[in-house]
Image (cartoon, rainbow, N blue to C red):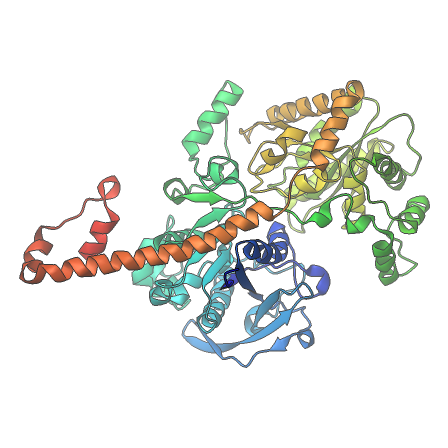
Length: 608
């Protein structure tokens, strides 16, 4: 057997998951992915006879216990606003073998905690992301890495701090998890000075990479630099060609989305949401889709929150005065034995449905209630406020329907708080049929998914979608909007299409139409409903294919560097043959531009 090839990859990201360890943080889906992806990449690489070593790079947030980390003897100078200081660097290897490198500076990171890692002020954010990116770039330069894989705009400045000489030999790839947030920062004293303050040459870089309607755009800059140096720009759903999912949506401009909304409604839409936020770079450059996977521990047969020993350990930490579940029967039975199940043991799911009903409504279920659930954050993206608009008509349509909603709004989010008030109002009006809880409770969220019949996901945009996988894998059928990565569960879900974000009543009607279809199937075609449950629970959500594509991307990046080196050799060889005719040739040689341009010609022009 041929000897394994070695490959070292640096993977910078702002969130790394692993929140339960106290040495990681998860605010959104980014943390889940960066936690699960590295070990999956190692397995996928081994299948290709590659010995892959990954170092995940992240900030060291203030609540981390540094005594659990190993401090490295490294000096990483960072310059901000003309002031130079050193970052501290720490290392930790987790039980799964994955190595994480942490970057700490008290001045930059002292204010952070488990729930606050992203500055609300864009100028503070720019300073923080620039400082940490400089430190990460300094570490990468000393680390003998074969490839850099960046995750989202917060670390998008790293290529600029690495410099062109470094990027000539080492590929950089950039994965976009959510293009709605691009790192757009207002200028202070113009574009040049805005970049000079973060230790980048403004005159050289501003107009070519960063300028976005007289703002800095960190995502735009990273996309351009990645593409320019031969790396791939990817996003989290779709295929390599970008023909579906979020990769396809990012290519659509306002006019195209508006036209689709018009065709959908049959009348002019009032307002549409453009996923690329009018950054036309997405329409011009190839954005590949590599759809996220999900760990097998999220399957109903493996889910930790359905295992008695896990809940017992959790309860031990909380203390007897603070039970995980409020209902005594639910508390006793969930902690007494495992409630994991599979598609051939749905009687366990029926028992979970009973325990969920007891927990949320305080009584044994009568007849055959349909438990319609929603779990998530009350933010614009998730659009869960729309659920409140369809509750009463659903309760009228089928007298056995009940709603269980676990969702909360952030402090200061007026829209989210208004949705909370609306859900509390409905729960008070219909106490036996509407349950609302705005506190965070992980075991309860898992019980809601596992015991519920339908999961509502009316997202305004959903780059990949994780909750659709989470719900489907425990037999909770998705009713949601066909956006981003959500169509990946279309064969076992009820999805509606709607693009006019100004017509909430119209969207509520489309949403309710799918709810009626789901309820009708449940009531009148139980065989079909059972088929949907089986299809959902047997979805192949594994990382195998996606991780393999990422490894292929790393191999591709190395081949591109070889190709670029050969191009340089060819240009240099030709220039040498010109000899005394070089000046004459250079005078006449003027390459075409835009669609008539040729990259080879421009390489040659630059060499001349």
